[in-house]
Amino acid sequence: MLLSDNEFQNIVSYVKGKYGINLSQKRTLISGRLENYLLRNGYSSYGEYFQRVEQNPGGAEAANLINVLTTNHTYFMREFIHFEFMQKYILPWIQETQKNKKKDVRIWSAASSTGEEPYMIQMVLHDYFQMEQGWDTQILATDISTEVLKKAKSGIYLAEQLQPVPDKWRKRYFHAVDSEQYQVNEEIRKKIVFRQFNLMQEIPFRGMFHVVFLRNVMIYFEEETKRDLLNRIYEHMAEGGYLFIGTTESVDKSAVRFQYVQPSIYRKV
Ligand SMILES: C[S@@+](CC[C@H](N)C(=O)[O-])C[C@H]1O[C@@H](n2cnc3c(N)ncnc32)[C@H](O)[C@@H]1O
Image 1 (cartoon, rainbow, N blue to C red):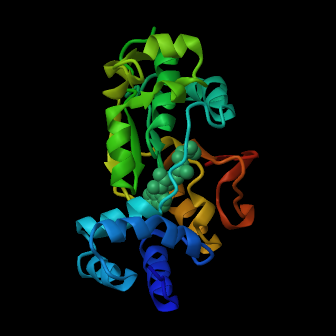
Image 2: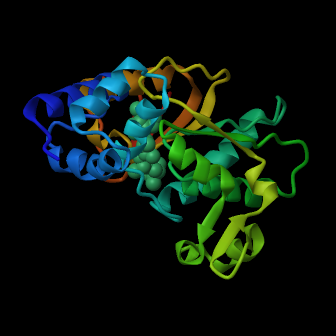
Image 3: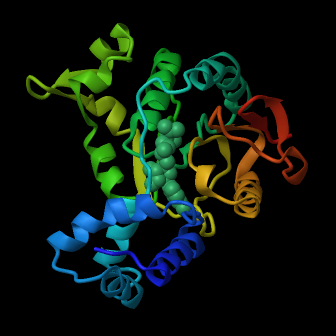
């Protein structure tokens, strides 16, 4: 099936306008990921499919488009330096500042994909606060893709995906579902609220976050989109709160109010 210039441009500008993702250099990715779906579902052209998407932006085809076009690759223990940093510097800071307050830990995994990232955050929190009474360690995990959120909520992973996970966590926080799959234990799963959220929209969550994980999502965002997003997130963070971005990502330091702490780590001061 041929993806015409016009059809390609329409899809690119729709996805960029609505989700911030710039796929103008990704023609093969678009046709590669959509073609099979279109053929299986009886469409005769990309144009016909795209018309359906545009006619009903809240409908199943629009959700499918973004499910198919997002890159959701993630894995347990990714960029572990952030979890070490959190354990060493951020949790003691939260513990200190929240001591005489609500004992509320507010963390947002803002592009959580299939859940590995928020589950690891929760494991670090569980290890850290297990001996302490009264702490609310429920965290928020969001993504635009309904497909990855479904998987994330189930907390079920193939045995090979658990390979990077240290033994002590594997034993403590997972149980076998069958000979090939493991599930994150209920005590960890119930402490994560998964929601669909488009980072291009107004942030509707109440409360100021102590930590935001915004890792490996801005790769296809343009500078202006990144700047705007980072400034909106800044407004929803507690004074002293930390932001993590992917270790291979960059931020124009002069365009954001965050203070640079070290590569991929920023702070609201
Ligand atoms: C590569 S994954 C990152 C997962 C994890 N944070 C990590 O670092 O391993 C990027 C995720 O960003 C999500 N995403 C892309 N654009 C988004 C948007 N506009 N709003 C919310 N999520 C978005 C994708 O669906 C995808 O699951």
